[in-house]
Length: 67
Image: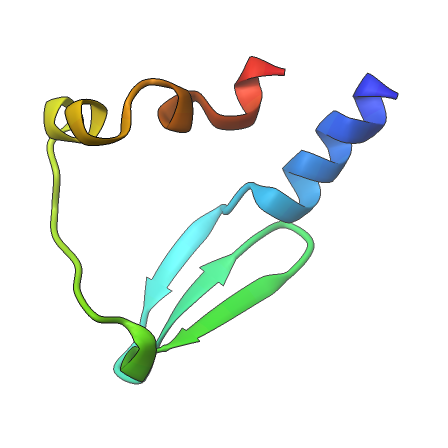
């Protein structure tokens, strides 16, 4: 069961690339793609690793690796 869960996470919920295009943001996963129209993006900013950890904690950074 754990192997199936890891496989599902790898295939459907782990992004492999982010493509910024003039009209959208395309998030590519091994088994699918998700496109977010530019009109839905309200803002973005670059964070250092330290800033990210202070705002979001350690758990979100580790993600599914904690299984």
